[in-house]
Amino acid sequence: NFAFPVFFFFVCFRYEFITTYFSYKYIPSIPIFLASLLVIPLRMFNYTIIFQKHEPGDIINTGVLLDIIATLALVYPLYLLLGLPGIALSFVLGTYIQAGFYLYKMSRILQQPIHRILPLGNLLMKFMLYGLLIYGLYEGLSPFVTPVMSMLTTIGVTGVVILAIVRREYRSAGKV
Image: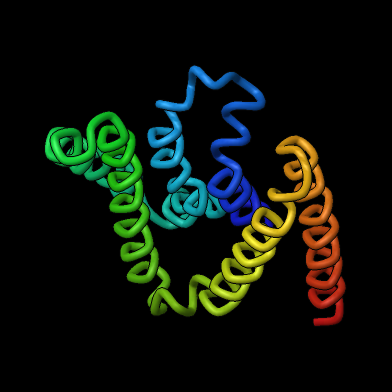
């Protein structure tokens, strides 16, 4: 309920955010900023908590090493392909590879398929909901109001939706 809205807000309002809160001279950094944003959806889970409880630290260390190796293997080719945004993207992809490794190991330790560990249906529904909500607000407001007003309105409306969903989920969990 928080990672997806933050992700979509900054993806949609990347130009407005950078130019409003910094300045127009930072426009060339926006592709790097966008590539870096792709890691936000991964931040909704603590992938290592199961390993801290059930396994020695070798899985965590292997995941970190895998992240570093993947990042180093990707940084130069992605730099050649995309320039500076490729460097940021290599770090993001290394983190995705690490998260995939952790999910695989977690499913082995818990002896459950990944779809039983992660609420994929719920995540997909929220991904679509927040993506459509924020994109709709962005497209609907941007032609008519200033960038600051558009961003503030989107934050306000999205905040109300987040609170409503969290409240509904809290009540639903209490009834179980």
